[in-house]
Image (cartoon, rainbow, N blue to C red):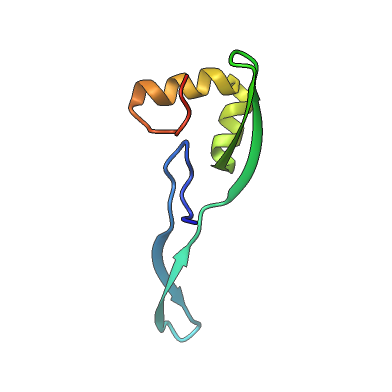
Length: 82
């Protein structure tokens, strides 16, 4: 299971751990993902999405159906047919 947000496309990025002595070792920054079920009233069905916290905030602000339409206009493949 990959750690990628289905709506925003956020994925792990790499960086460095920096010690007190300024030694650098590689590390990964993982996105804050949540597996969540949503109900789409317009389609009368439940969908399960793996979304980041940023996507959850956008869904709360716009509504799920409007946010999915916005993603579709941008060309993001969400895996949900509207």
